[in-house]
Image 1 (cartoon, rainbow, N blue to C red):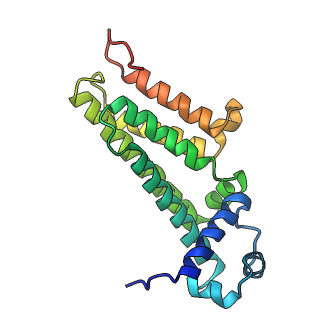
Image 2 (image 1 turned 60 degrees about the vertical axis):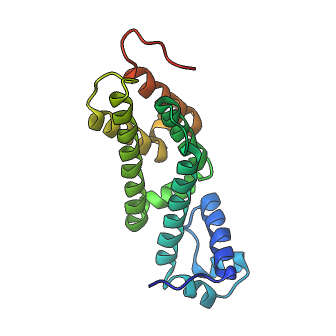
Length: 196
């Protein structure tokens, strides 16, 4: 069983997450981190046994918090089209908090990349569930929900890694908006007009 964090530890993790999101973590040493957060290395060791473990903890915390905030954002939305749009807008908002350096470091370090990939798979599963709901409610046409969700998942991953946004010359937010339009227009029932 994991010990509960002290208030100071929780505050340090919050500050550490902000630091990593802004600058990444690959170039930072434990000495750098301790100096930036005005704490001792032993305080950091109380959070994790090494810099690598600290990175895994902070990255996991970021994605968990992002998922919780996105779920809160869509809670109570009954219109499946609005749910998908709001989910993707929430993902864009969360990703806008992360610098290119952070995303690159997450991608370059296998344990944090694994966390990142789990997050992308979870997003694809949520989108799949939304699509299935829309099909069952006759809001969307009959489609292969898993295929659509996997394609959306690959696009989300491409946005998160910066590949798509770099190639298209757009921001993450613009890419997620376009993904929402692509999905919703592609799922639209024939003869139906999209809801505002």
